[in-house]
Image (cartoon, rainbow, N blue to C red; front, side, top):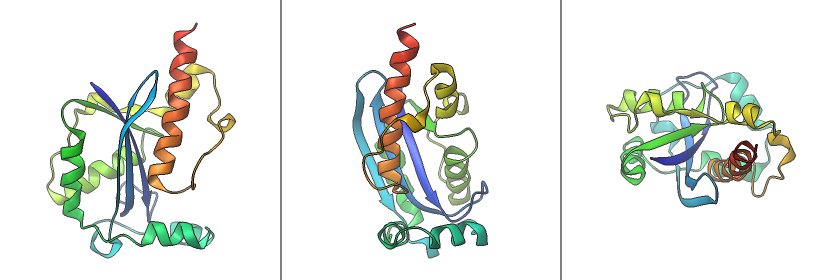
Length: 169
């Protein structure tokens, strides 16, 4: 099994949100990043919903962050490339039990693309944080916040430390 941290930037917080960008990091639980994948989508072509609250939140973000999030050209069908990149058996991780993975699965379903993992393999980073006793906020962020790849890489960095903390008990 391969662990894969997935982070999305979206236009809504609902499970039906449009995906702006997807960052994913294959990682080893004890050493960190192995490989990564990043794609920015043409939001006008993506299925899904947009909320006024989320769009207002985006307007408060730095201009460069907004340009990165909303400047994508990839088509929804390019999610097939992501599924190919995943390869065989994976355990997808999201930074919460009902956001990134749920939105991605809804989008894949809407596009008729098979979900590339078994539902019982989905993992939740917040649960790992709780079990480890470590606070994710104690880890310094390296990169641009609200960039899907930078967020996924940051989450891998603290997931590795959390696994180490659990194993050292």
